[in-house]
Every structure is written in C-alpha cells, then in structure tokens.
Image (cartoon, one colour):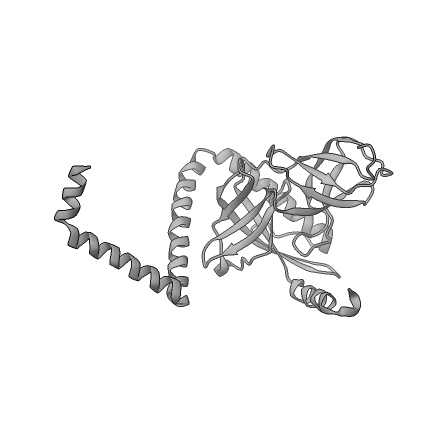
Amino acid sequence: MRSLLRYLLKNYAFVLFLLLEGAALALVFNHNSYQKSKYLNSSNRITGNIYQTYNSVVDYFHLNRINKELSEENAWLRSRVENITGVPAINDSLVVTLESADSTYRFISAKIINNSVNKPFNYFTLNKGRNNGIKPDQGVVTGKGIVGVVTHVSDSYAVGLSVLNSRWSISAMHKKSGNYGSLIWRGNDYRTADLTEIPLHVDISPGDSIITSGYSSVFPEGVMIGTIQDFSRPDGENYFNISVQLSTDFKALSYVEVIENQDKPEIKELENIIRDDPMAN
C-alpha cells in the first residue's frame, strides 16, 4: 500500500492527466451521438473480430460436424424452396428467396461466433450485420429447427435473442391437430421448453411434432421446433402442461440462416393502423 501511495504521489501529474482525459472522453461520447455511434461500432467490430478469430481455430477441429450441419442446412433450404415455389433450389446460392401467394422470404447465410446456453437470458452473435442485409426482428434457424431472433445489428455483426431466453415466447403449433400455443423456456434445461395453451380436448402424444405457427412475421409456418417429450393434465386447468424436446442442439450451433420476411413492413403498417384505431379496441 505504501509503495502504491509513493508511486501515485511521484506520478500524480500523469495520473491526474489520465483521469481528466477519461472524463473528457466520457463527456464526448455521452453527449455527442455521432462520436458515440462511431465508438459503439468500433467496439462491436473489435469484439466481433475476437469472436471470429476464436471460432476459426475451434472450427478447424470440428470440420466433420460442420460439414454435416451444412449438408442439413442445404437439404432444408432445398425442401423449403421446392415445397413453396415448385422450383428446384440452386445448390451454391447463399441467399435464397422463397415466394408464395402470401409472403416472400429471403434466407441469408450466417455463422454463430458466440453463444450462451447456461444463463436465464441467453444470446448469440452472428458474423453478418447491416451490410449483409441483417435487421432486427429477423428469425434465425438451422436445418434442425429455430434458434432465435435478431435484436441488435452493427455494420458487420448482429446479436440475437436465443430460444433459451425466459423473456421471450414463440407462437408454436401442434402439427397434428393445428392447435397453437406459446413456447416458453423456463431456464432449466437447454434441451427442453414448455408449450402452453393447448386445450385438454386435443389428442396429443409423446413424439408429436411442434412447429412454428406462422402467426408472427418472424418465422414462416412449419419450421421445426421440437417434439412432445411428456405432458400432464393439471387439476382445475383447461390446458395441458407440455414439455417439448427442442430439435436444435444449442450447444453445437454453427451455421444458420437468417430469415427476412420482405412483406413485413406492409403487414406491420396494417397492424399498426388497427392497433391505433379506437374502434378496434
């Protein structure tokens, strides 16, 4: 402690300079939006570069698994294109547009370079950003199922909210019956989530598929979420308690597809009109 005090007294001018310089920079960034945005973009870029370098090293030792995942991604994308458009998919395309009478989806290939699974509120980082067409509120999927939704973007990177986040729920459908409810992760096990609001009269069984309902502009209908693991009928309740085995392995995420619903602005514009209409409330 004495040595530290002697050092501070000896170099007080330099220490004072550092403190004043730090205070000045803080004032500049907090009160000038341009400098603040440049600082945040630089910070995001540096962090993203660190994650990307680390993942490049890790990927070298997992090439077989990554190749398998990429094959699954391509198969899933080809099936989506063929089912919706009737036109065979182009194998080497990184961006695929799927058109139907109701909506147009654009799939942008990306890679997860940071991911968490053991927190109450889990997020992931993508190696693509605004310059690649990534925007907030776009869904993220793999060939096995849903991953999450984009929340923040910089020029070259994006951060997303994982399915493994107890603050988020997903509109999900029991494929066999067409009944829909909400999928919620309770923060316990990264392999399972709970499905609510499925009425007791619905015929359900372990192994039944749970898919996206299409009732939001984030995911198209029919993207795999998981299968029913088990369920119970609570006394005095009108709905099942359903545990869903998630189809996505959140501990082995690598390459993903980001979904852009190109009709979303038009849909949101109409929904906002209804929301603001006093006669509709």
